[in-house]
Image 1 (cartoon, rainbow, N blue to C red):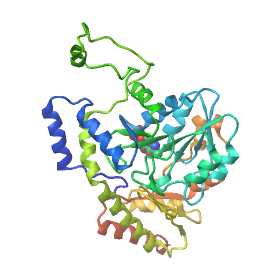
Image 2: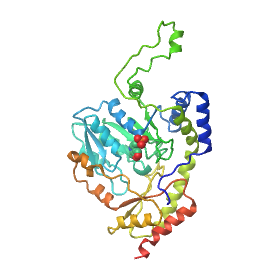
Image 3: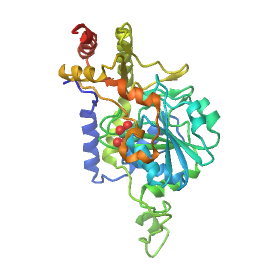
Image 4: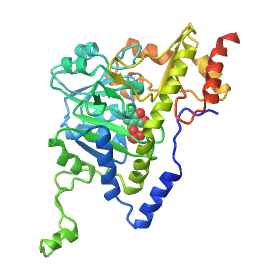
Length: 376
Ligand SMILES: Cc1ncc(COP(=O)(O)O)c(C=O)c1O
């Protein structure tokens, strides 16, 4: 079976992990700080703090931005469930928004329609690696907070800035299905110093980060060095040096992953463009770049499910990301009809696009797609 997600974890990552083992300290320390610094530099983010996963960042962003019961948070419905869960967990109301039929991204027009006096934040997703129309969104959303789910947009650029640095908080994932893979892990990015201490506390039990290590306290001639000061009450969402050692190696390879993905994207676009029963994904807006995290097809004539079955029967794994949140029973109290998302959900399929696909795999995928209707 040709897989839809893959990774390039190899000898380099193993060697880096071995070094961490040899150091006899596997918790978050210098390697994690180094990863945070290098990641921040690579996307030009002032602050980058690693987490154990991106879902923890989504939950944390609600606390850090003071999202409270009674608040409304706008969220595109074609989206990851953790985003809605985080909003509801904060006591706020998720306001599901429709998306553009081509980009699957939230639009400024829909934001304008759904904003009320209670709207305090927008949690947006750049679908599939393709940046949203950020300037236009900012113009209509005014001073509400913006959380950018950048889990699809590693190194995607909106004009001269990287996704994840456009809004108040950016959120990246390094789980098994992402471009940069560490098994699990995430990075929160933000540009405002105000969030720094709050995030450090949220990430680690609420402990005030100024607490010095025992040795540092000794140097200050303190008699005891084990007192605890809490700034808030929180869980524990930190990363560690094993994960960060893998991440640093992956960081060196990511440009190569993305350029291979772009090559596959371009092949799909040129090879499939004449099939009149397909709608292909659009290119990024002018002056924007994509990470090419996902490739998607919209199948006309009600044949999506048949097409999906046909692909799997031909050993090509396909799926659909992301099942619209407003159609999930658990969220039914927040549900409302959203026409484009429903059409997307009925017609779309994601096909494999990752750096481990060989040219032979890509040709096989293209030929298999082309043969779908020939067999009828
Ligand atoms: C868009 C999006 N946001 C957030 C997440 C959560 O990432 P993590 O698995 O690191 O918690 C995912 C994971 O699939 C995702 O696809």
